[in-house]
Length: 96
Image (cartoon, rainbow, N blue to C red):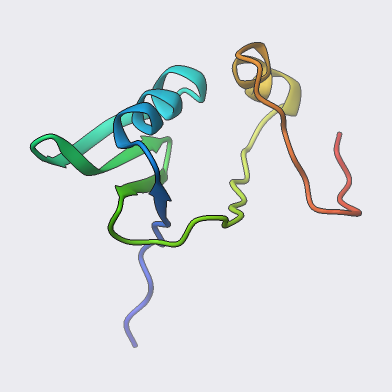
């Protein structure tokens, strides 16, 4: 039987350029590619995690997404926290 290789969420965004910049500048992702002129669809990646961003095309607004990270929570999330972002968890989740 064939095995699944990966799952890539498609996030619907209001402003593709601003969203791409946010993921790169604030969350430490790298741009893998974009499509269109001007671009309205593209991919960012950090480690093995990839996220597609789509302006006015695919996906639905208002979704939640969990990304699990290896290593120390404090050191891994330091760049995210220092940029003014907040870490959110599900109700009842244990945060270390």
